[in-house]
Image (cartoon, rainbow, N blue to C red; front, side):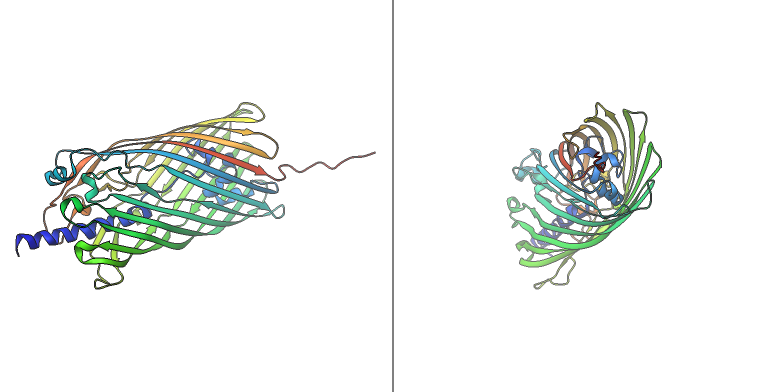
Length: 444
């Protein structure tokens, strides 16, 4: 085979392999914790307990019983991310020469994350509710192409999770609840910028799916000062479908799909009142990210229909979150809080994905709740999340950097460091239509 022929095969492998990676990375790579402004203010310590109000339903659906009549909450989180990848020694001289030696600039996009919760007390034992959240999704895109744009330039996907809930208050100590989840994934778009190397750009557009799972949980109050919340969110099997444009491998336009599993999750939250003012909270959360290992990329229309040009090696491990927080009741209307957390990422150094350069992280948070009336209250929470410096390694040791079967080298390696941190601000509005049973009117 001529050198030009070998080069064409390598480019074909890079085009499809790179797109396959970026297509599924955001479908299952990162879960979004930011579902509660009160939880944000204490690094999500006490997940699922009454300190989070109805927003605790995300982790523990039994929190639907945290209403006296009909309650509703709206939470909004603003995430200002910072992710800069700097290529280093070992990066392809061709990539640096064509794209330039500069770093990626900030590839993290501003994120707006809404969540809403509703709960209704049917009778003293039966409760129904709904949570509407965004549990998965992210977006990365550099301002200008850089060396890493050869593998991933733009990556984004959004999700909405509808979770109707039925709860049963067994007694004043124990509540249980469960409900189905309908997860809508949409607006998936993933692209590569290869034109500077003379290869037509490739991209996947309009990726989406509707999948089904479930959630369950319980709240146990063994004493008047102790509350334990245990929640489970099931794994969700998805089939993302969209279209691909990859002229370099003879696919001017075709349909594609990728099967990926979103992980199940178990969360344990504890709330312990110390005295009339101080309350301690803690969380241990496990996420089964190891269900996401290798994901095939399949063309479903056109001349290449039925082929599997690439497989993605996530090689994820399970994720963990440990957090501790304190609440202080400043006065009858205002509660202050703070917390610290440590999260173990599913990403491993040797397999870190360029489109989602995730790593272990520290959470440092502070917040407050103010009760304006018996019915109306608001929360505010702030977190600084530190990921620090993380290695990027697209060489022979990373299966995602292989560009064609049987080729023992990576023609365009990329080695570097990702520097990441986040500033997060969350606010909420809570409203209880009948916060407390009213005493009967006594007349003479």
